View 1 (cartoon, rainbow, N blue to C red):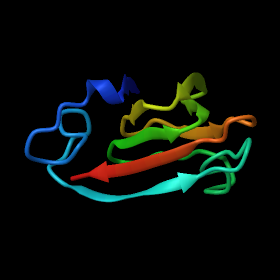
View 2: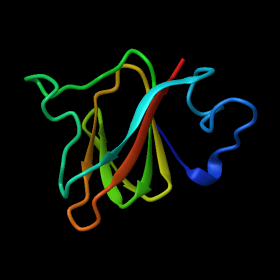
View 3: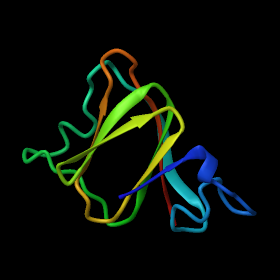
Length: 108
C-alpha cells in the first residue's frame, strides 16, 4: 500500500494518476457514495477477502474512511489517495459521521 494526497499528483500526458498507478490508460473504475459505516467488498466471498491481480487506486473525494490493507488500518480523509498493490486484501469502511465518497480505478 502507498498513501499519498492529491497534492502529490503530477499528471503529464496520460491519466491523472500517471506516475502513481501503473498503466498507460485507466480502464475501469467508478465513484462510490458510501452509507455511514458501510464496508466495501463485504459480500464478495464467504471468507471476506478481496484482492486483485493488478493495482487499484482509491481517492477520497469527500468525507472520511478507514482502509484495511491485509488487516492493517489506515485513516483516510478528503484528498487522500491509496494505491493497493496486487494481492493485498483490502476494504474501505466509510466514516459514520462523515461518510466517504470514493473514486476508484484500475489502469493498464
